Image (tube, rainbow, N blue to C red; front, side, top):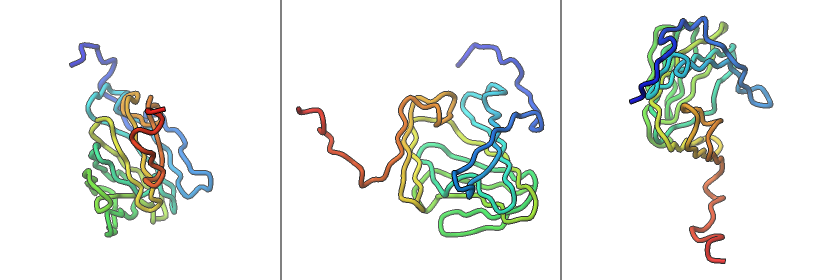
Length: 171
């Protein structure tokens, strides 16, 4: 347990600094604000996600280590979970447990107004993230406060890119 004093364990979601996050073609586009580190959370991650109408924040994915939960603050949309699709609206709570493609998930703004939700997750590493739509995976470890972008070890690939266990070791 850390003995470090937390500057302020309270914040308002309206005070959270948002950053732009988007794919090159704009299909995936959101404004994201990390809350966990701001309030000193150590074993839980929290992030505000704001998605414009017709947009998606993240590709369809599933974590092997991190469990997520979402609370819809405002707006409406669709929750894609495994092979099912669910209508969602303000006040709904969504589960995203660990697993395989049958538990992959994605939140899509199908409404005509901003969709804002709070994402809460456990923090644990290493994590493997599968992307069933594209056949990719992400592996990361030793990140800064649960942020995969900052990981010391980070790899995105496809299973057919695998090399042999002794590759480069027996030369």
